[in-house]
Each structure stands twice: as structure tokens, then as C-alpha cells.
Length: 280
Image 1: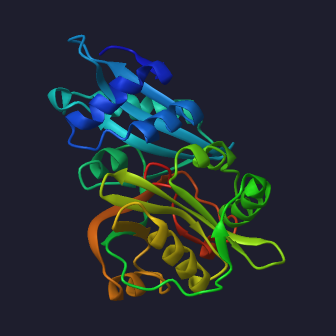
Image 2: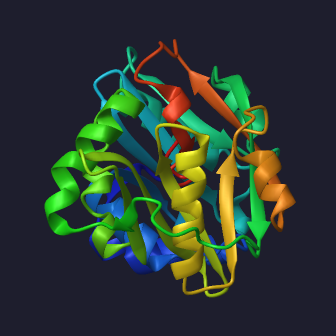
């Protein structure tokens, strides 16, 4: 087994090629952001052709981090590379750090073996949102000067600091919107493309479900693609039924899992979608 090493911006092409090898989208913009803002670990392929595997650790707080983009090249599947990467990542995170992730059915057995427990389901809804944008909703494009307020609202909702990613969203997302009541910013959301024909709306932070819908409607109307995607908790009442009633359908299911004690923090009822399923 070759050693696990820290990857950097020079490995962007290798990360994208690894994703394409597994049938994922190359997502060079996302990889570029993660290589700059997060800790990306990889194993060089023994045959000298790119990476045998990679995984991303994003720290939100000393006691909270997220795992994403866990990939092993097709030709090295079931040879222990995934477990080696995850064990290295968990060692880097630290014993006292709670680590969360979005698990597919394929990855779940490994995560369970490493001590991850289920937290909740996540359902990806996608389609053409057929609902008009209502006037005077208090939603507007975000400006550079809004960043401190966005970070404050996000920190209060998430219960930890996501600045390392949120501060890079202007260079990654197609659109960022804020909910401005006139007395200050109360919510924010971003829309970014994970495919030429699909736009993900996330993160989505709002004071309530109606405000969240306003942000979704605005971003869907300004999206550069016709298909939008929302990653939602199917057991919450605010958005899943509304999304289905207005043209979005379930297209994928994952399981949010955690290793370590997931202590209550922030105001989770204000968190409607994640930044990405790569950033639990």
C-alpha cells in the first residue's frame, strides 16, 4: 500500500480524473475550492497513472469536521485503499472530533466498520421548478459587503464557522442571494452548477420555510440551467412536499452519518440544504 499524502492545487487534474474514473462529474471548480480550503488526502496509484484514491476533510470547529469526495479508482476497488484513506483522515481529525458525512449504499458498510452511526436520511430532489417568483420578497443578490452578515447568520444557524468555504463561494457559485428584511440579513443561499444542465441550491439558510422558498424561487429563476436540485431532509415538513408539488422529484438517497457524539449546536431548523453533499 503506497503512503497517504496531502494533496494540493497541483493535484487538481488527478482529482478530476479520479472522479471521472468512477462515473462522477469531474467538477474541477469544486475540487479547486476543496484543495484550497480543506485537507485533501490521496494515495498515488501504484501503476503510476494518477491517484488510486482520495478523500476530503473539512474542519468546521476543533470538535466538528466533514468528510466528502471519498473515491477509489475502479481498478483498485476492494483492496483496502478506501479504509486506509479513511483511517488516515480520522487520525488527522483527532479522537475528540465528531466527523459527519453523506453515505451512499456502497460506502455505508465501510463507514459502519469505522464507527459511523446513522443520523438521518437525505433525499436529492431535482427537476424544473414551476413556481413564479413573487415580487417584493426581500430577496436580492448578495454583495461583497454582505459577507460579514452572511457569516454571522450562518454561524448562528450552523453552530460553527463555515467561513473557509463560504468566503470562497463568490468564486465558485453562479449566484448568491440574501434575504434582507430591511433591518439586516436574515438568510442566504447559493446556486452552483454540478453539471451543464443541473444547478444545486446550497447552502440554504433561512428563518423559516416560507423564507427558504423565497430564496429557492429567486435562485431557480436566475439559474443558468433549467434543472435545479435540492438536498433535503425528507422528514421535515417545510420543503420536500412543496418541491414535489412544483416539479421536483426524488432522484437519489443518501444517509447522513456521524462518528463521535453529535452535540446540539446552532439552530438546525434554519438549515434547509447543505453547501454540498461533500460538506456534511
